[in-house]
Length: 111
Image (cartoon, rainbow, N blue to C red):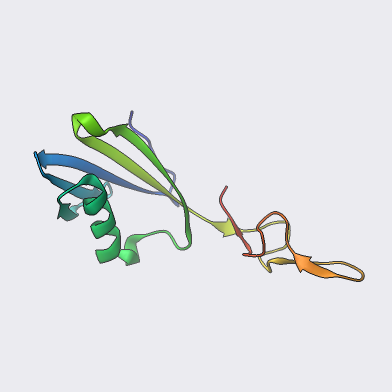
């Protein structure tokens, strides 16, 4: 299955190139890649080496593909400012100030 991200999401493809080697690439920049001994190592290495390409405040990752066939896609979703608290992370009532229930006090939510 191929996923088409919107402009705020990042798609990373991971493919097996040999029995014990995997390569991870940003779909929008295939020349940026990282090779690892497993799909997880390639994916994590790519993210560690190229953090500037990641969505700010990455909040969720979806995985598609087939590990046994040697192809995976990771779709990274950014978190957005919580609309319930306006990104403050807290609810201010008449008497109490408490953490926002929607974002659990972080000020950010995953859509």
